[in-house]
Amino acid sequence: MKTLSRIYNTLIFAFLYAPIVVLVIFSFNDSKSRSIWNGFSLRWYEALFYDEEIREALGVTLQVAILSALFATVIGVLAAVGIHALNKKLRKVFLTVNNLPMVNPEIVTGISLMLLFVFIYQTTGLLRTGFLTLLIAHITFNIPYVILQVMPKLRQMNQHMYEAALDLGCHPTRAFFKVVMPEIMPGVTTGALMAFTMSLDDFVISYFTSGSTAQTLSVTIYNMTKRPITPVINALSTLMFGTILLLLLAVNIYQIRDDAKKKRTV
Image (tube, one colour):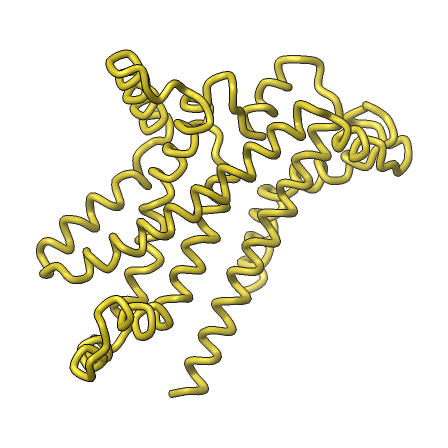
């Protein structure tokens, strides 16, 4: 049974990652062929860095990812603290509402936000689709992920520590940053990295809320597929895959070290 289980798992992972492996290999191919290997070359990575359209899309993507992760983390932490302070029934209601955007199809969220921005623009003249609407959309769908990462850390925290700090004369704001934040910091860090990764990876919501003035890499890649495809897309996809892989490894390593540290202190 163990042998069959290993074979089954190997086949599943091979099915999932074989296309990515092929993509990475042919990003180093010397020719434009997508099936014949003509020798190792970095020409497509060089062409990628000289492509102005991709450089602009990369700049927009990184700006949106960093800013949305920052704002979503701040809002998500405050929301998680507020939800944690509620009674059990209200807490369940708010957590259920928080989970809805994550299980809701992205296309529904994207169209809803697009219609909202169009309505605001037509009635007030504000929020024309562009960088700002793209940023607001990314902050919106990132907040639930941050809350989901911070809530378990709040439940694990000793609830009397904050009250003890207040009893000893500490100001509530200072007590929050000195007592609560160190306890929930692993969840905050994980939530911020997840928000950054989700923003970096998003296509559907970005497609509906970016407009023509600010496009992310995913939208740019989609537009490139409407033209004759070059291996530049392979190189770009390889770099994006490598970046997300490194972020996930960083999150896992951080969690493993945090768990080991807690075991040593127990």
